[in-house]
Length: 281
Ligand SMILES: [Zn+2]
Ligand SMILES: [Zn+2]
Image (tube, rainbow, N blue to C red):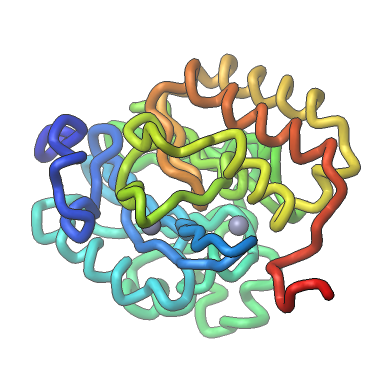
């Protein structure tokens, strides 16, 4: 929509200059990484946000981690300065800090914006913005001008109140905690899409993330969930995936099975608990 997507030269681009990144026309990946230590390795995770720009209005999907607000705000302002339509909506997949931790600051900074999606309990934290909250259900669409944003079935989630989002124009799925996996800063993965990060072992990092963050996957038949995911992807004809914690996926047919292999593998391993604290004696 603005410049051409910058997929070709990204590997030669310094990490700091890779974001905001247009992963599909009018769909911008923004935000920053979060470093976490696990099993002696430094894993980087994203708590990404995405700006979807229509002709008349833009919607922000997720707000990033609370620490990321200055970066998210700067990236958005860069895009608005380049002519992207003003922010009218904020959609968060669910009420967890890495997804909605900037919600109050977004609503304060953009006084014309509305919060949409599942809006349970937000009015208790932010009563001053209650009149700007609109509940969405599955299939509800918001018109942005030339494209719309739809709430869709959240197949893999950690809260019952979760909705996933979908851009009807470029067929981009925003699956929140689905397709969650870490990446390695040392290997230069930051700001790359999944298919560019060729040294990233997707089944391995997907299974690690499921182990740490989606404990219920230990007790469910993940074949059923992966089949349901395939069904959703086929039904919506998904072309691009913008996960909150993983790298964006632009080759759905090739990359999705690798993430699913990680989910299925993690389901067969005993739970290791949360982030390591002290080495066991
Ligand atoms: Zn999450
Ligand atoms: Zn990183």
